[in-house]
Image (tube, rainbow, N blue to C red; front, side):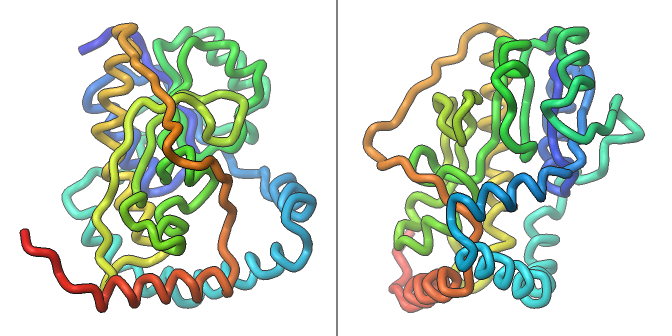
Length: 264
């Protein structure tokens, strides 16, 4: 087992617990830093400026629909997907701290003190350049095939665009952009049009990303990373959907349901 420790920066969720536990089975974890997720107001201001009031209002309406309808209907399938995987919170088994911001002084001080072999990131928001300068390698697990599906809900948008073949996961180096860092590995997921939803797709993407992340961390600790870029896909940043976007997603799902099954 490599001796250089890892530092993990993440927001709390079942999928990040899945990632943390998978890494802990292979590597020494110096510290798990949970970011409190208090960047909601900043994100709202950014989206209002970037997308406009009506689009943001539509996104909020969709989030209400998700909470009332999609999320409850997805729980059984998510439980099935995660069955047999370790999604326990790591608090009683690994050194854990809570911070309000990934760019706060606690994180910078910790990175400088630990000198991690790599920093693994999941769902923390944008990391400032001054923080990225404190360690040689920051690695992110991203639910989307970059550079086409940067931002959020990559598999959802791939299906909405009629590109289920591009529904997948990217593990990449972090740079100051939004999911623009060099690629370390990618994997596509299979789509089940009868059971997959806005909520189940990210779970499948995280599961597909686990072996990619383990391989990337092993390479980083051995100083053998081989990052690359893709120039065959147009780059685009995606945001949360609106009800109109979800109607387009549902139409594509219905097309997949009607498509003839392929022979094995």
